[in-house]
Length: 123
Image (cartoon, rainbow, N blue to C red; front, side, top):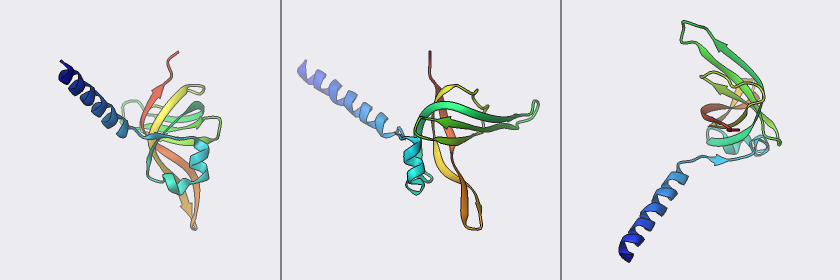
């Protein structure tokens, strides 16, 4: 009986470790802004409140998406999505890849992230 319990415990712990290893690290927006090259093209998770959003949705076409700005209290970052944008004021968790925007004359404008997944805070 004890060996069955030990096996179940080991399997449970192994599953938890594998699941945790697949999750991106949650970071603050200030950490991303302070060292963008450390996070460039890396998958991270952030959480905060949507402060601004701009979306495009043309009915009858596959064209939709947009951008929204997330504020976590330490800073703000624009998130690009291929899905519908969330409403202003929504409390959200986002996972995606960090990248930079337009590069003109060797200067980069617009640090942001490309959304892979999002979750809304349940009230």
